[in-house]
Amino acid sequence: MSLHEAAREYATRHRVRAWEALPWLAGLAAFFLFPNYLAFGTQVLVTILFALSLDLVLGYAGIVTLGHAAFFGAGAYTAAMLAAHAGWNEPLSGLAAAALVAGAVGFASGWVVLRAQGLALLMLTLCTMALLEQAANMGAAWTGGFDGMPGLAFRPIAGLFEFDVLYFRSQYLYALAVLFAGFVAVRLLVYSPFGRSLTGIRENVLRMHALGAPVRARQVRVYAFSAALAGVAGAVFVQANGYVNLAVLGLERAAGVLIILILGGYGRLYGAFVGALVYMLLEHSLSKAYPTAWQLGLGLTLMLVALYARNGILGLAAALRSRWSGR
Amino acid sequence: MDLASILLGGLASGMVLFVVSVGLSVTMGLMGFVNLAHGGFAMLGGYAVALAMRHWGMPFFAALALAFAAVAALGVLLERTLYARLYRASELDQVLFTIGLALVMIAGVTLAVGPESQSIALPAWLRGQTDLGFLRYRSYSLALIAAGALLMLALWLGFERTRAGAQIRAAVDNRRMAESLGVDVRRLFTLVFALGSGLAAVGGGLGAEILGLDPQYPLRYLAYFLIVVAVGGLGRVSGVFAAALVIGVLDFVLKVEFPKGGAIFIYALAMIILLARPQGLAGKRA
Image 1 (cartoon, chains in turn yellow, red):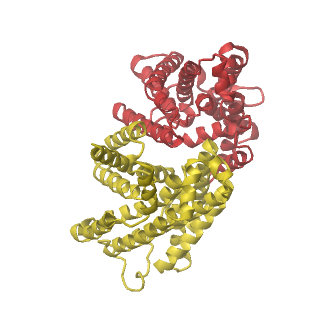
Image 2: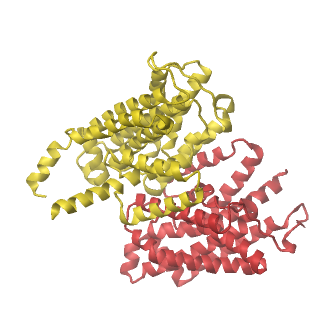
Image 3: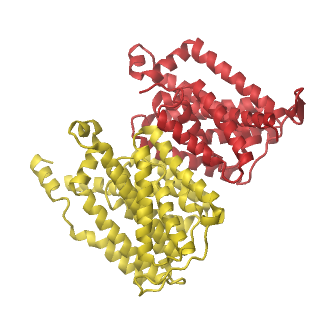
């Protein structure tokens, strides 16, 4: 790539391409094509939003975390506890409350743990999540403890659309709309000067310090924003499914979303979409019938991805494309 | 339970944590490799002990030795063929690779042996209780404490008094400097990896009585092993020893006193220590 071409790419990369309408058209088409699979589709959309929030932290800011489910869980429990104990079961304001609480948890924990790096940071994020999980387990009077809170009911979305317990029709569209809003926010953020400076921090922390960028303040800010987004995903999960349990906060969910993002390709916005769809389709069709084979295949795939395909499915696709056009 | 028996129980589980985690600490310290599959080696060791005793009628200690040798050999094989490709990779790739490896180990064991948990029959003289004069306590826990203390002594002598130990310490502190002085760090690392995975295997066999033994073992205790290593300090045998004992005893005491949420204090303590000393209790400031 010549310097001129590179400059042009940087100047135009934020523009919306025509193909970017595809995922949303596909999402809408799926609503009409697979009316019996909308419950599954809703889980996929929630997971995409969660993976997207992780992409901000991991892919753009380069903060490796093992505990992102802490914020998914914080949002989920906020929505659930408001509905169960305060009778606050209006969904949209529930989302806002979840975003606020999860964002505050993200800000506080980010402010504390982001001073560490490497193994210490990994452990601190893991311990933050474990602390929340244990707290949710202990505060059984408020959180339902180990059993969680089943049978939560929410008012119609925007006063118009009843939650559809049987077919998940309104939940699916609701999740799709929330995901779209979240995606627009993330897209605006990563192409903003703030987003560019995050990438700078990821690529060369020393140079960003030398340039006078407030490195830690920016990391904490993006961590809090990402946490708020993960909290929204958790709240949609609770509202759509009508229950919450400790699994929303567990290592399994945190590792799962990490795997999904890396499988799809991190630092590329759409990696979350591809990863969540591929992973969850495979999981859905395999994990019940052949749980061990699923685990074995997943493990082998992860090893292969780490060894040979570090940029995930989208990275592979991009490499193939550039090889084709290079000839 | 009175204080002495709680302390002894905690010390016994701390010793198990130490035996399993010490290898992880040294390999992480030497190469900076985040190895989340370490618990898998411990599990494989436990299974090797259980199966060798059941199918070949091996005595307990012979089975432990076999587990050490077999898992150490597997460790060398994996280190040479796979781990070595990722030394220069990012932390994230290492995390991903080793989670994958742990899942493969879990699935492999489930396929080969089955999902149910295994038990290891102890030799007759380790069952029952021993009279300590001031109280009677489970013989096996006392034996674990003695074995852990002996191992610590042996490792300490190995690290402080032998040439290889000095080389390892030098490489942990400053790998480049050690290399330029002619230390073959790669070969040293293979050696340490073998020893570390072998020790984890012994820990898996010894600790089956306390930690249990089933295919989910590697992920269930992952956080504990990592906390012990991170709190103790990378590549610091004495730090890991102290951290394992403190965490073992605290965990045991808290789970007796607050059965509902005892683990919360361990995570909180680990966070406080890591925030105050990111390099661990015994680690040197980078």
